[in-house]
Amino acid sequence: METDTTQQQVEIDSGRQEKAREYARLRRQLSFINMGIAVIGIIFIFWSELYIGLRDWLQPLSWQPVAGWYPLQVAAYFLILMLGYQIITSPLVYYGGFTLPHRYELSTMTLRSWLADFLKGLVLGLILETIVVELIYLLLATQPQTWWLEVALILLFFTVVMANLAPILILPLFYKFTPLPEGELTQRLLALANRAHTRVRGVFTMHMSSKTTAANAALMGLGNTLHWTVDVQHYYLSLTDVATIPFVLVLTGLFGLIVMPIGNGLSRAIEYQADEYALQTTKMVGVFKSAMTRLANQNLADVEPSPLVEILFHDHPSIGKRLKHADAFAERYALNASLSAESLAPTSSIEPLGMPSSGSSRPDSAH
Image 1 (cartoon, helix red, strand yellow):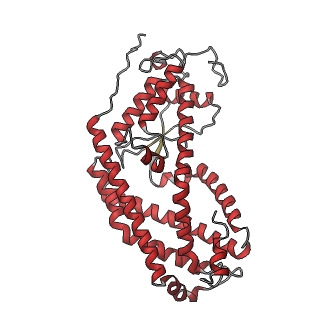
Image 2: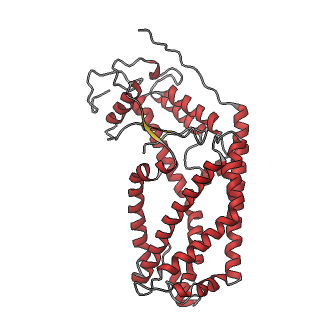
Image 3: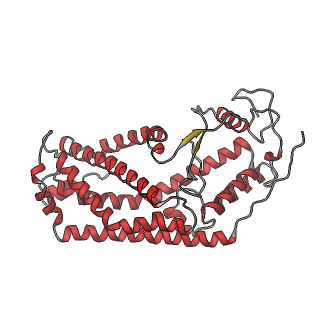
């Protein structure tokens, strides 16, 4: 059987790139406006002493199952603040989440389905965030000196657990998953997973087209500052005073702003290694470049964002850098970046495309 060895070149759409830069700029502006609203809100809460008044208003909820821990008061105080912020910023959420993606033809959702997803995400987020806040105040009451370390360890464990459970418990709330039908593609993907010594439960299609035109794929401490404000400045009644919640949110926000570029830099480094691993495993340079280019065109991704924007806001390398990475890989291994191994027909139906069989189907075979 003849195999077509030509590789169709996919070019970056200059018109789509213009839209991508405009779309990214508008989304950054919305983020800055949201941050501005949060800052103004926090200033108002402290200036008006609303943080004290709200605590006093919630005094009837001062039940203590553990000495110094007021779970009903903490939950009510936190939810009032978060829901108030959500109500104030709801026009921006609607514009950024529904209007803007439709304007740029990135969303296929109806208003009803968008609202359903938004409410599910809001409820789920508030539940998880409330649990975290309750945990913080429970540990403040029981472990006032080491609470921050224990919170960090518990959240690390929680993150690992959720990374495993999210595809089973959370993503199905928003997307429909169906098993990919048996066939050559499924076999090749499973063989590729075996080659990478990765156990998978199956290959599934995540039905994103009902919500978006964008494409995607997946392999699924604050220290003693509270002590200072209580023991030295006497701003609060105790470490577990619910009136400290706005202060904790301020510290968390500042901490997040500081570590965000660090976290994004680490994420970009990991994603670079993931790209390197994909190229090393498949040697499919042309297909990789084609996929990146199609993603840029389809998802309105800015191929060459400014270095400062990428450092501060991007948790993946830019498409331009990923394409350059593929070119460097091809040069390093003397491959043709356009017509590399993906143009070779696989000699075994279970071998991943572009990886000639070594005569063994064992995942640890040398190739």
